[in-house]
Image (cartoon, rainbow over all chains, first blue to last red; front, side):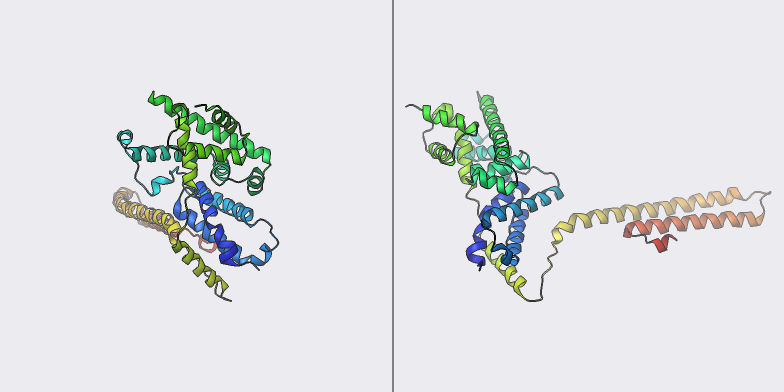
Length: 169
Length: 165
């Protein structure tokens, strides 16, 4: 028998981060987590047969997030700009903490500008540490396909990082 | 110090040939204070990735979802959540349309009446029969009514087949 607090609720954070990376909006992402957890609870009898609950949850969450993403306006909002103020780029160099925040925004913005498939795969591999096999299952694609998208995502980041460095030379 | 190993790992990383363990080694390396100059820019990337994993939901979330679970467990009561914030843009747009049409309608009435007065004057000449003038005025009134009718329909947004007939 599946127990909500023991088996389903613990998935909340990885579902949240995955949904957040797709919809780029905290409120929206929280709604999605809630919807998925409740739905899983309501289907707990069928879920007994599922061997990897996390993969199941992430697949459902991603599909729901993509739906919501397409219904929202096409805004590229940085994850962090929902919560913090953006530092003034002129003063960023003078204060170590500001410089750190500015670097975070830069990376976040670059990731969030990637197409959904690439940034979801990057999220699952580089941030959540999932195997190619698991990622392939969540996205319903081949491992080879996962690697291709991951390659593109990582190298786009590399390019932007090098570009940024050259601007300061 | 020789950073050859890290540089090789980095190259492998961007070629997607690293294992999860090797990627963890890269993250650990870049999390330290003294990262050599020529590799420093990659520190931002790996450190961001570590921090991004620390995004979590709080207890208030737990409370909300547990409350909803209890609701859905009740035998008949299924809560239908209408998230009004999602409908807000729709209501706003509908309000704007209603205002624009109301103003447009009012303006047309003002212009329409003015024009009608002129037409009535022009329609009545010595050679026009009285009955013809009556006919013209009646047609104008009908067309004005018809316009008002369709405007009201579009604010509501529904025109049934019966109404059309």
